[in-house]
Length: 235
Image (cartoon, rainbow, N blue to C red; front, side, top):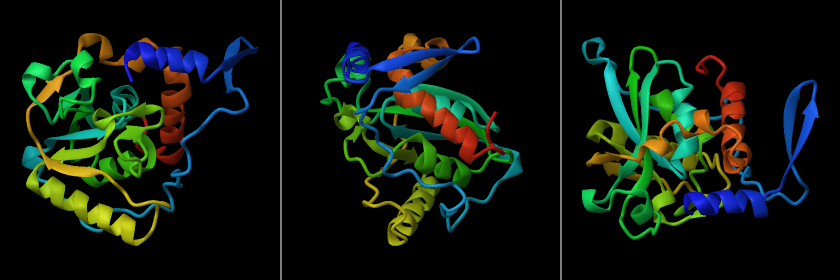
């Protein structure tokens, strides 16, 4: 779904009532709003990964690339985690020549809208990032879509090192075996390849556009959920 389509969808298909209360604005979805919350599970009951990556204090700065639908919301979730020093929205999985929003939005370039996360592994673990990814950032049971956005560019994916891939696969197998979700996890696990940063206007989109209708409906609730489910990690 293009940026224009996201705006049109938010206005036409998801009407918002703004009610001013005590100097603030309470944004309320109208009845009939289609939500995507069937996968929501409390973090306290959500299993931790069965295996960990050993932390090397001498090499504490690590990176991982995650894809979970529109990168606006995924970026915002991980920017609000203690120990995360940088999050960049971009494209991974395709070639440089087609790594731009108009081309990626066609769903024909093999890219996924992704976020590159740089973090201090002595402050936040890879396993904690994975848990936030599955509990808050997106719905890992949706194939080639996320909420209102459809296409392979919105697929769920983890791009990492061999060890990061191994830990992620064990975790997914663990979650599927425990039937944590009502459907199997469809997250793709792949090696890191070239990461192409998205256009500047897509970076920090939610901070710069907090009242954008799509953001209000689909992304701000993720931040509320992050604060509620992971209070010790939230910043």
